[in-house]
Picture 1 (tube, rainbow, N blue to C red):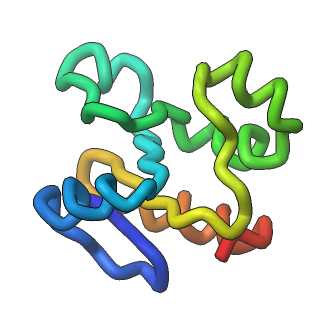
Picture 2 (picture 1 turned 30 degrees about the vertical axis):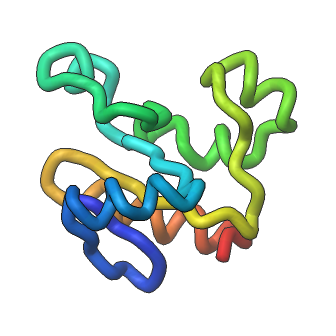
Picture 3 (picture 1 turned 45 degrees about the vertical axis):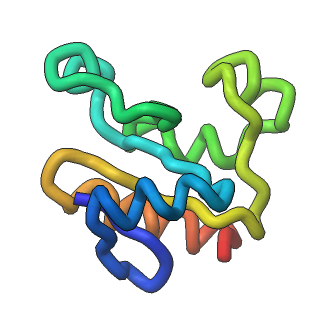
Length: 100
């Protein structure tokens, strides 16, 4: 399940369209889940328990750790997980850190 602004859920098809417009997709599943079930193309895997720290890193650190450009607080970010619970938590964390 995927969550976007205002806890609005988006379908995989909507996500594919959003990705055409430079949305940042963060998958908050655990690394073993990615290994077992596969990675969603062009997503950044940041397990939920690392997310708050990751979103507060300096951009150089973030790039070294996750091999991706760090999202800006104004970027459109979509979170995903397995069932939707963690992606909603991730959205709340990001909002509390000032992400719009």
